[in-house]
Image (cartoon, rainbow, N blue to C red):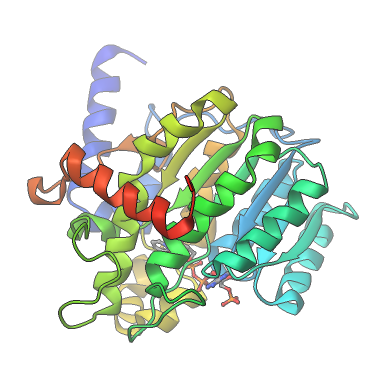
Length: 326
Ligand SMILES: NC(=O)c1ccc[n+]([C@@H]2O[C@H](COP(=O)([O-])OP(=O)(O)OC[C@H]3O[C@@H](n4cnc5c(N)ncnc54)[C@H](OP(=O)(O)O)[C@@H]3O)[C@@H](O)[C@H]2O)c1
């Protein structure tokens, strides 16, 4: 590839990203895959002998991640809140890869911090090293809902539960040089970090705003978490899938899903970067946001970029709510 085609390829990729609709849709993925700058696929046996856990693996992108990670040789640990739905996906994974024991089901409500503690305790007791932990479980409730501990649901499910789970799984992640991936959303570009009101107690509640704020919370914690866990040899990443056709998207944003149906990505395209981050060698640099195999800015609007003090104050709220440094 000559220097000009490399520059042109990066420029086209960036243009797709900044114009949002083309980049997030199936068009963005299809075009980028054919650019000369598209990174190589992971080795087909990249994850043989490795263990990777995926939350929310009973549906949509989580199910697809489980299938794709297992296809690269991983034993996948499906962290689900409904055992029967998890077993169904485990059966699909084993049938797809032709390997008995390729998938194992663990039950956990990720929004419930007690459930997270129980899951992590059982997992660490199994002494399995974790190469990957994909925080994929997600929801967009129509009305303000609270978790078992009384936290606003999206913040608990997307931020508190995953941060606590990672901290408690540290022995497994340190043993496996783990890569932790937060599956975030491009919706976070529209929102600021809710430093003064992380629980959405003020103003009229909107599920889409709460969801996007919690997803911003995920990306703003990346540098804090990457530094916190660097000494354990782990790395921390976020990926955003673009707009992918899933049961979750249909249920939570039916009009959006119906309007964009012709250009929605497949589940494979939506999870491609998550699988790539877990499987590629070497690990991508820690603390960054990835989409279509390239690191992306976490803010495009100046107003959505928090100061270091605001990020620190949000982290303080997360540590207090999870009892992390108590
Ligand atoms: N699809 C998109 O275009 C898109 C775009 C941006 C970001 N994302 C993100 O991608 C992730 C997957 O979304 P999806 O579109 O695949 O949605 P989905 O089909 O609804 O899947 C969501 C998964 O999360 C699980 N889940 C929900 N609440 C949970 C809880 N409290 N504890 C444990 N698991 C829980 C669900 O379990 P049940 O089966 O029990 O309900 C389901 O397996 C989410 O984090 C979402 O924010 C998706």
